[in-house]
Image (cartoon, rainbow, N blue to C red):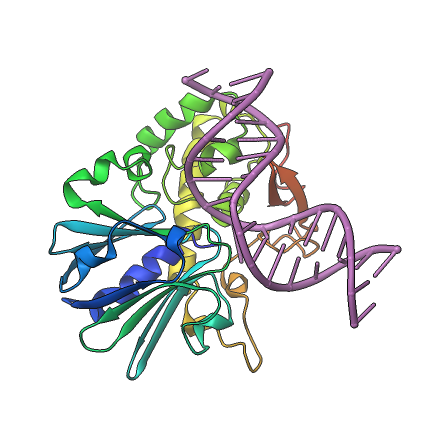
Length: 286
DNA sequence: CTAGGATCCTGTCAGC
DNA sequence: TGCTGACAGGATCCTA
C-alpha cells in the first residue's frame, strides 16, 4: 500500500526524532531484506532524510545512504521512551511489542531508541548505496519526476513514450511519474473522469492536465489526512483501521455510490490490477 | 523498443 | 474445522 503520501508522511514523522541520531547497531533478521554491509553504519550519524517517489533515503555521515523501499507490505516503526511513530502498511504491528514475526531489520540508536523495518511479504528492502552513486542505482536512476512536483510538460512527454499502453499501466510506471501506486492511480483517473483501460494515445491535452491535477489532489488529500499513520489507526481494541475512508473516493468502495453521480462504484481488472471506477463518470469511449 | 504476463512471499478471506 | 484457490496497495524479469 505504501505510496508517495505514505512515504512522505513517514519522512515528516521521522525527520525531527532522528535528527543527528547515531547508530549503535543494525540487526538483520532476514538477509534478503538488507542489501549492503550493516557494519559500515555503526557509529555513523544521520545527516538528512529525503524521499524520491516511494523510496525513503536516510543519508549518513559515512557518505552512504540507506534506501528503504516498503513495496507492498513494508512498515517502519520508531520506538523511543515515550514515542511510537509508525507508517507504511497498516497492521497491528504498529502497536504490538517488537520485534515480532514480521520484523526483518532493527536499527538501534545510541539513545536507545529503535527503528523497526517490518515486512510481511519480504518484497521490501533496505539497500546501502554510496551517496555519489545514487543516480546509478537501478531503481533511483530510472525514476521519472516526483508526482508532487511534476510539470505537465514533462508528464505529457513521458506519457508519449507509452502511446499504446493502457493509461493506468502507464501512470503506474515509475519512470513516467514517481510515486503513483494502485490507490492514487484509481483516485486520479476518477478525478479526471478517465477510464483506466483507455490507451494513452487517446487522451486529450486537457485530460492529461486534469490527470496530473488529480494525482496531486488525491495525494494532497491523503497527506492532509495524515496518510496511513498511527494518528488514524486505532484498531487492536476497536474502531478504525481503514485509513482509506479518510480520503478515498473510489478505492475499495465497490458497491458504494459515486460521490459525484451516485452510480454504484465497480471493481474491475485493468492491466492485471484490481481497479475501481465509476461506470458513469469514466466511460471507455469518450 | 514496447506491452503484457509471471513471479518473488506470506497472510487473509470466500467458498465448499 | 479444514482445505483450496483467489487475491493483496510493487516492481522486475522474461517473452513475444
